[in-house]
Length: 170
Image (tube, rainbow, N blue to C red; front, top):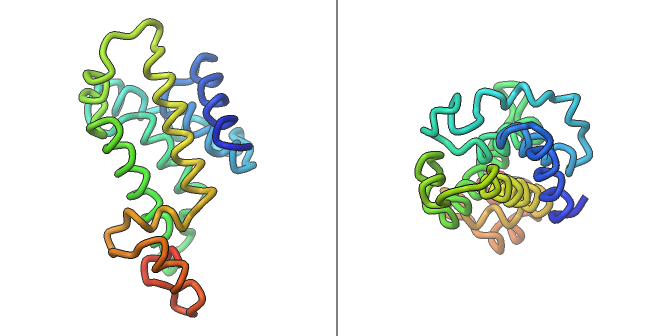
């Protein structure tokens, strides 16, 4: 799937009855060739409308994408590195915040303004699924927003070295 297909799938899932977090989780997983049924939307159910419909804390669409990212790139043991997944998560969060002005559900909803049938949330969920799909498709691009100071160019140059750039991107 390409980004547009992932975004369309998130819209279909949201319009079909899943909420923001569940739709983004399923669309991102499907975009990576992972059957969403293998990772039930249940994993994201508590994150719709912020945390538990509170319209507080992290936006549900962003939460669903972060859950998908963890499923796809997370570690299995305490010994495994998690630099790459952390870099991707930080990058998408930063892009989301730059575009929406906040990552807080209530603040995002306020900026979106009045909605008809959740239309703005549906479009935001689709766009957010696209951000995660893009980050997964081009991992070096996520290095630009990492806290380690690594840039995509640095990561590409360091990738040839056995230790990489240190942030997990290379």
